[in-house]
Structure formats: C-alpha cells, structure tokens
Length: 442
Image 1 (spheres, rainbow, N blue to C red):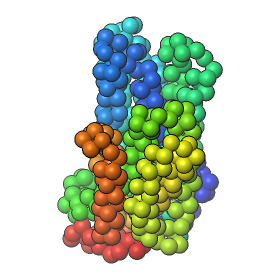
Image 2: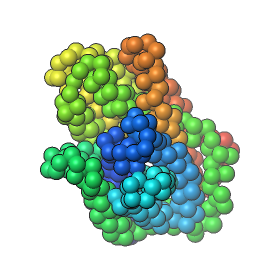
Image 3: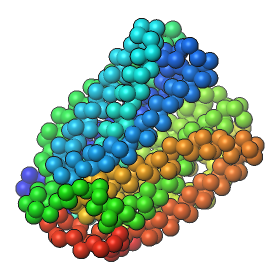
C-alpha cells in the first residue's frame, strides 16, 4: 500500500468494515433462525410443516447460489469504478433486502406473491453479500499501515460470529418478551427492521473513508483490466481455486459444529435446545476472539503458519468434539464447542489478508470475493446435507468427523501451494504469465 494523505484512522477502518459485514451476517443468521421457527407458517402454510420448512430453508440455498454472481458483478464494479463506490452499493442493496423481508406481507395477505417476494429479496441479499465481504476486506487492507494488514482485515471477518451472536440474542429477547402468537405474527420481523438501522450507521461511517491509494494509482496508470473476471481466469485461475479450497476446512468444521452438531445433540443425545444455544453462543464468542487474535498473530508469524495451526487443530479436535458432544455432560459439551470455535478462528482470522495478497490490484476485488464465495459453496452450502446423509447411512458421527479431517488436509495443501501476486501494487505492470508468483508470508 502506498501511503495516502487522506488515509483514515484504524478506528474508522475497523468501524466501517466490521459494521457492514456484521449487518450482512446478522441478516443471514436471522433468516436461518426465522426459517426454522416461523417461515413455514407465514409463507408456506398450504404445505405439510416439514415441506414448508424445507421450502423456507430454500432461501438460504438461494442466497449461497447468488453469492458468486454478486462477487463477479461487484468485483467488476470495484476493480473498474472504485472500491468505495462498490461498498456503498452492496450495503445499500443489503438494506433494501433486509427491510423488505421485515415488511413483506404474509401468504394469507397476498397469496403466492409472499414466498416469491421472499425469494427475490433473498436473491438480492445473496448478490450483495457476494461483494460485501471482499470489498470491506479490500478497503481495509489497501488503507492499512504496512505490518498491520492481518490485524485490521480480521475485523470484517469477525462480522460473521458477531452477526451470529447478535441475531441469536435478538431472537431470544423477542421470544422471551412476547407470546408465541405475537412472535409468529410480527415479532420475527423486528430483527430485520433493526438490521436496517445498522445499515444506515454503516453507510454513514463509509462516507468518511476515501478511495484507496491503490485504486487511485490503478486509474492513473491506465492499467485497469477491461474485464477483471476474464483476466482473473486467464492469469490467476489456479490461485482462485486454491483460495476457495483454503476455506473448505473452515466451512466444514463450522457447519459440523453449529448446524449438524446441534441437530445431533438434540435428536441423538437428548440435549435441550436452550442448553445447546448457550454452547453455540460460547462457540461464537471463542470464534470471534480467535479470529482477531490470529489475524494479529499473522502479521508477526505469517499468514500460512497461523492457518496451518488452525488446520492441524481442526484435524486433531474434531473427533474429541463429537466424543464430548456424545458424553451427555453439558460441561463437556460447552468445552467441545469452545474447542471448535478456537480451531475455526485460527483458520479464518488470517484468511482475508492471505486472499488480498494472492491477487494484483486490478483483479483483487473480483479475486478475493470469488475466492470466498466459491469456498462458501464448496464448504458451507451443502455440507449440512452431506453430513446428515453420511450420518444416516452409517448411523454414526465418525464419517462426519472423517470428512472434516479430510477437508483440513485439502485446505492445508491449498494454502501451501498458494503464492503471492507479483504485481501487488496497482501502478506496477503485471508480469503474471501464470497463476503463481512469489510466496505469500510463509
């Protein structure tokens, strides 16, 4: 990064990036919670309750499928027009989607248009989320002082567990304060409307951040890619695949614990939902703290070394996680979820900076956004269904643990093979003839 006289303070960078990604993930997890609790009744009442729930969860799949398209769309916009402009658009679209879900009429009011509108709004949110994380990370990285990139870019990543914590507490608060009937009628809408206020705060903070110096130099050098996506596939396709595979273990372990683990604990072991909710809140808290810690450590020890530790911890702890979860002791269950949160955080904390350093400036927005979203499709979109099917076939959690262990090996190999872009500043002409350059912080 070249210093800029208008460079924002670290506090402003953190507030801008963390607010945006927290809003995005707050809404993502709020939708998942509402889909499991009330959407089958509000939007799909003519179906069997189980079928209605499956259809409601279809909105989650729609969001995941839309993300890579949003990454390509806003990546092009961010690499051609500017990082700051793209971030304004993504957060604004997210606000429209969030507000729309909170206000969309029920099936009883407008019939089949209710679920159609719900899916359209989820599509908008998926598109926005595809460009939000990458943009927030990129603006932070390109404004960061040398040697502080890992610490600062870990904050937008921390928006994931923070959004999860806030959405869980919000739904818990609403369900505790009002009756079940009121919650089903209007209470579930409150978290989405609250999310709109956070969007407004995020837009205000982002208005104070200037365009990055890398982007300014890129425009002045007349070295921009006409079609960033095409150049990315032509020059950095292997790096893109490796970035996606680097996320695989993090996605697998997160959903093995948070999604499959909760279902397994309730249905097979017999824990109450509230007990497991406490455990998942601790998981999220440990995840949050470790993301920030590992991002800071990566500035001193290197991105790869810290992530290797996370992958090794995942490989070693996933079997004890399920063994403790199966013990019948809530104290051991809490320990299991804390252990999973720490392992996941070490994989995810340095990931943002690693991606930023894997792509040159003229395709960086597109590259890091697609890297994460494709990794999300591989590691998150279908993993809960995959784990459930393997458990059904074997009647055991061992195949699930084996899948997570295999993903840790794959991600380790991917990070080991990932290289740093030669043209790390925008003004430097690209000398990339292939997908790999010099080593990234190894």
